[in-house]
Every structure is written in structure tokens, then in C-alpha cells.
Image (cartoon, rainbow, N blue to C red; front, side):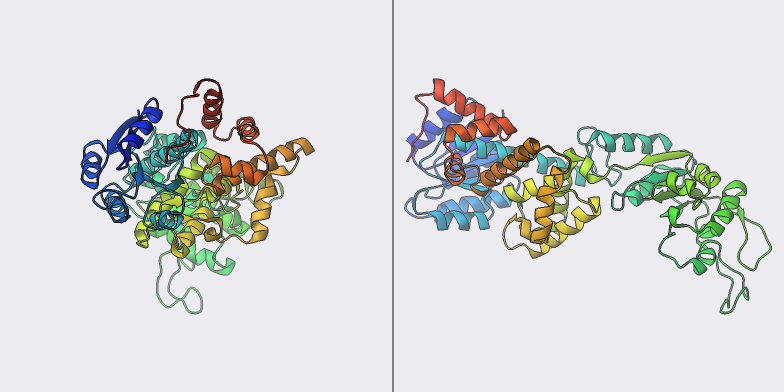
Length: 477
């Protein structure tokens, strides 16, 4: 069972909370700062509920904040839920700014508290997995190669990299812009017998057409005006290593012919030269265009396609990697928080729901860039949607993008699901306040949550509570 700790100076409250939570968690109790920090070191609980009023100053908050500070310093992944009384909202918000995960106002409803605890445990697990990924360890069978991901499509990519890494076959990497094609190319190079040789990258779409040939093959002194010395091209520089041709679909037709000759014979001539130069380089290429269409309309040579694509790897867009979106989000947040020395805990519930539902047309690159911006601009430990740099129009587009092609009933269900999830996030899992906000009864809200698969565990807990838990705690003061 997951370990949690209750820190409260009131023994009766500790006893009641342990009785209410003990069936689902391994619960430890502390009544003072010293006891809490001792248990923290010994048991390393993943979640702590903390009453700020602790002895010897039970009427103040100094000891509680001292415990919070020690936990965030000694066990930064531990999630602290501050339990406050009426009228203590200001202290609760200060606690959030100081690093607490969330707060909950008395009287305590155990089912609502369990929802918050379960969300905290889920985030704790994600952060732990991301930390392992950052250290280059395997997580759930994931071998990162500098690429993070656990979904089935990315696992297939990792498997292909392992199989072809040690060979010298040409590889064509296909995928939308921002999916990580160059990372895959570098991973293949790192797995190959050429890993100690150069990795030379050429962006075929970024170099003016009249300069591409000299960029590729170099030139002899006097070959043209301004050619004042013999100069090697990218192909020569890649000898004994890997040549990566990014955006190869943009390569002009005349240069495709010369590249094909090189791939067939592994020899080349500099511009203005007559000597055949042998080059031992592995060829990796990448494109974000539809190669079948380019071959059909004559803009790309079919024989060159088969030369560069002995093995083809297709990278999935981020919108098809639902299992990876939050994993990547938290990985980037941790990386940028450390880079910019910011105390970032994660995303708010609304921001998290938005990130999961957004289409990400720029894929992983867009996600990474927006999170970098968010970490720099954020003013609180929890990032909000606005921190990600979305304009109101973009938010509306993201919210409505999944309705295309739906029936009216399907669209209604989608809207209902988004509104409920957003409201629950707004009130930090407080079901009573959410129900009031939405203008429905709590039983109706639980039914709707169950219908849409939102926090099913809390819905089931509510049903059990209404039938068999008449003795449950509903009003701990």
C-alpha cells in the first residue's frame, strides 16, 4: 500500500483520519514537527496531510510552515496537502506558494480527501518515472535513447533502433514536424559501430538551391568566383561516420541525381574537380512530406527513395501518443525548473486537462517550447493555461477541435465532460463546491462523473458511502 502521513496535534483527529484512510493506505501519524520529520526520514511517505497549527505554538502556523519547508527540502517529491480551518485560506495559499501540493478546508469529507490524495499519488508516480527517465534508466521497458515515451508506437520505434543500430543500412525517418526525427537519427548513430565518428547534419530545405551542391560535395580552388581555396563538403566530413539528410523531400531534382550516384557508388567529385573521392558514410534521411505523393507527381525520384529507405521508421504525432503527453510534460517541467532555478510543482488541474486535450500541431517541439516559456513566466508553483502562452482563440479552438465529425449527442457529451472536469479542477476536487457551481446535486454530479469516467474511484466511493458507511467521518473539526 502507498504510504501517507497525517500531521496534526489533535490525537482524536489523527485517530479518526487513520481509521477512515487505513483501509486504502499505510498511514503514519505525527503530532509534532520532530515526530513528523523522524517519520519522514524513516518511512518516506508519498503524501502528507498537514495541519499548520503544531506545538509548541498550536495557535500559530510557524511550526507547520517549518514542517512544510523541511519536507520540500528533504523529500521534494512528497506531496503535502494542508488541512485548514475556516478563515485560514490566506495561510493555505501561502502554503501553496511555499511548495504545498494542495489544501483542504475543514470539516473533512473523507471521500473528497481521498480524491485529492489519489491525484497526489498519481502525480508522485509520474514525477518519479520522469526522474528515472532523466537519469537514463529504463522505465516500464522504455530505453530512452534521449527520447522519452512509453506508448506502444514509441516502443516499436525503440525496438527498430536497437535492431538496425549496428548495421549500415540507409534509414528514412518519416513524421510530422516536431516529432523528433533528428533525435531518432542521433540515437541510431549512437547505437552504431560508427558512434565514435562524426554525425553530420544537412537541412536540405534550409540551404538555397544554388548553394546546395557545394554544401554537399565541396569545391576545388577556382571552381567559381569566390572559390579561393579547396573546401570539403558535408559528405566528405561525414566519412567514417553518419550523414543525416534532414527534410530530404525538399531536395531539388538535379541534386537528387548526384546524391543517387553517390549512394550507388560511394564516390563523389568536388565542384570543379575530376578526381573520384571514396567516402565511407552511413546515410540517414528524414522528411515530413508525403513521399508517395512526391514520387507520383515527379518531384522526388522513386529510385532514390528506395536507396535511402531500406528501412523506414514512422514517428507518431504527439496527439496519437496520449499515454506520453503528461509524461513528457512533467519531464520537461523538471528539466526547465532545474535549468531556470524555479520552484515548479506541476500543472493545475485545468492546465493538465487542457494539455491532454490540445491537438499539438507542433508536436513534441511545441510542447517543449511552451513549457519552457511557462516555467520562465510562471509566478506560482502550479502552472496555469495562461502560462503556456495560449490566446483565448487558441483555447477555444483546442476545446472544440475534437467535435469535428461528431453527432450532436456526441458533441454534447464532450462538452459536458470538459465542463465537469474543468469545474472539478477549479475547486481542487471539492465535490460539494463543484456541485454548487454546476447547479446540480452531489449525487447527480457523482453520476455524471461516473458516466464520463472522471474519478471513477471517488464515484464508487460515494455509492458505498451512501449504503454502508453511515459511521464514516463527515465532520471532523
